[in-house]
Length: 231
View 1 (tube, rainbow, N blue to C red):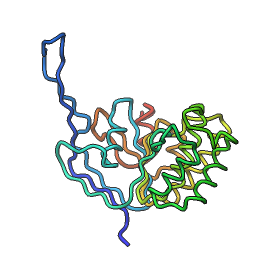
View 2: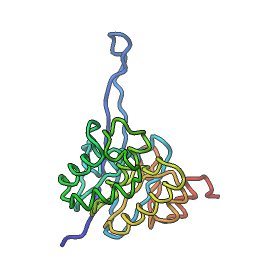
View 3: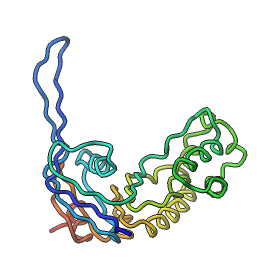
């Protein structure tokens, strides 16, 4: 079986648009979201991608997930990818969590009854598991979505700031589940602002600055650069 692999050669992504006032086009706007990104990630690596808001972290993960195309450069990505972002894996809000998980499990090739039992136990929302999702609170939806997402088995796991839902007890439970998922994934690339998470999980750190890689390597050096503690 081929090992998971990510290789990017000078990948750039440029957005173009127009600044408009009324019916008048004032000027053409060009924004380079990613600039000449080159990186290689092999199976077994857990990569933390850090940087200020707007640095290009989420754009990079969307590109790796195949959701956007580059303006230039080449990419070779091998392996089944799961992009864990937010807490909604594609729910039909008119259906209950149980009905949604049955549908999603069939799409992803998961065993339906076992997956539903896991998500029901993990989310711990009681009778709400059989109510339409549109009637649930955002926190309840988040528990169900996170439960299903972390039941999957990717070769490449892309994580974009997903631990923002629930009370401290649930967040601790979610962190344990996320660690389990990371341990069974071939490659992990996570975008995060959490220095603690990076220290605990990452084997390598990439710093993005205005769409460019300013550091790729040692985790502690990357953290120091990110926090400004690099004197």
